[in-house]
Amino acid sequence: MFGRHHKKRSTFLPFVIFRLILSVIIFVFLMSGLYSALQYFSGVDPLKIDPKALGGVVITAIRNPTTTFDSLSKLDFNSLFSLSKSQIQTDNLLTSGQSDVPVDKPVSFSFLLVADSHNENNYLEKALQQGKQKGKNLQFVIGLGDYTEVGTINELRDTKKIFDSSGIRYFLVPGDHDLWDSRDKKDPPTQNFESVFGDNYQSFIYKGVKFILFDNADNYIGVSSPQMDWLLNELNKAKNTDNVSMVFVFTHEPLYHPSSDHVMGTETPSLKDEAKNIILQLKETGVNEVFYGNIHYFTRYQETSSGLKMTTSGAITSAKNTQAPRYTLVTVYEDNTYGVEDVEIK
Image 1: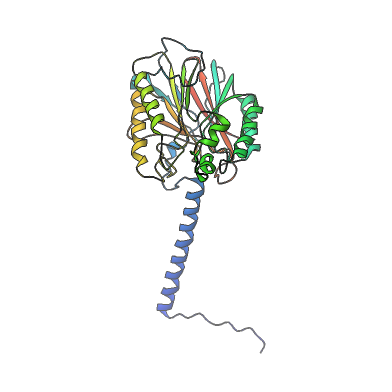
Image 2 (image 1 turned 90 degrees about the vertical axis):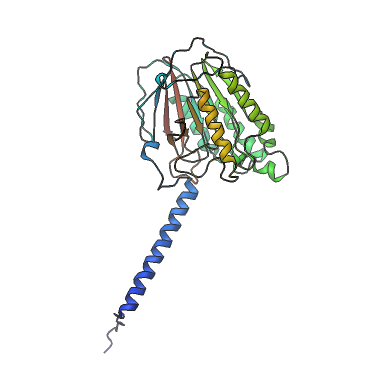
């Protein structure tokens, strides 16, 4: 008589159907929320990821240069050439973290790419120290932006201490987070960054390789007019010379990405046309590869219309990162090939 009585669920067909439909709707909303959260925090759309875009190392063969350069200089961009398809050979698109870099291949030099540390300077320091041990004939590091959360002077100075103490020469472009404090104070967006690190865009030549760093971190106004004039002028001059072996370009926001909307033009749609124009200019000039930050995910891919090779370096930070903290190591070989390696911070 004290037994537990269970109320029998209604088997009335309309109620059964209603409960089923309600369950499906709730499930769809939950999955949609999880999908949106993953896309927002990682910057990657899982439904658009091309497995071929998740690469580790590409070896690219280029013709031998007629003249070599061993000088490092700022704002010295007088050396590019156009490459035909017959002059470029790309092999071994691998999965994240893999490497096919030959052990016994003569190395000319190597350099590090670091991106998106967001004040986690302990990981930035680990990346720089680990890179010094791993890189063969390591010469410098290139930063791809977002070293801070809001770009205050103190945040930027703290980051500078880490770079300075590493003992490695470094060249940096700002990220959009590094501009926030200046913009909030109604100052020029790059004011804080330039007061701590100097120029927000520059170029140099090292051992016959041309390095171009330009600033597209301002996702409201894009590349400034003076900088765009500089970039286009230098690219035009480059068409008339062939005295470098390779050309690499570095900036914060991707000009294009196959599976993320964290690209140039997200905040101001008109900047997408600007990005397309820059891609065409870079491709026509013979740029070998463009390297970005911002995505918080290591990917390798080609822009669909131009075939321009692109890499996003994985994030240093442990927050908002679907991968473990990481950096990128680029090795340039004596035979004018190069390898790009995704490296997890240990």
